[in-house]
Length: 201
Image (cartoon, rainbow, N blue to C red; front, side, top):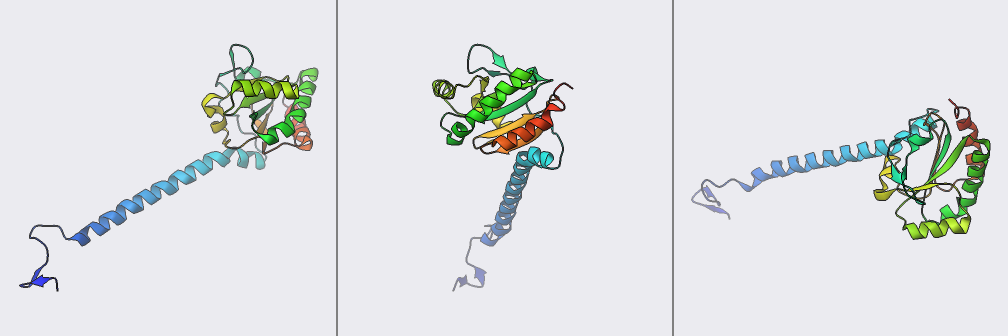
């Protein structure tokens, strides 16, 4: 029955098994709280830009001084080089079907911005081999510059995990519009109209 001579059925000096239960519960509770906090923090980071733009604010574009290698030619480039100009930052890859669908819209926007001298489209390749990116550009006759987001550091700063995603910046380096998904002509026209007001500021 688990009893012998009125003594419990464990050795003298041993810690009763049930004493471990509170410890395990505490450890699990701490781990759970840690995971919840981590999730909330990450979710907050991912949605900060979106929430600010939806509220009518213009958050500063992250990583403006992050220099990344150009897809075509030597050297590096960063967003900060384009202050005073509208920038349409587009994360893309050759294997992304929606990226193919929106390529012509972005190219038209780039040519219009270049002709008016008000800005540029800037692509950022996401986990894409350089030769595949070059083939994509030739197919769609892309003339706007792109950087290679090696390690996706720039994409992570914008909360980008899926493609395509586009961020329209005004001349002060602030985000005026975000498209998490394939852009439409209407989205880009509206976003550029808002951004151009500060293009020369």
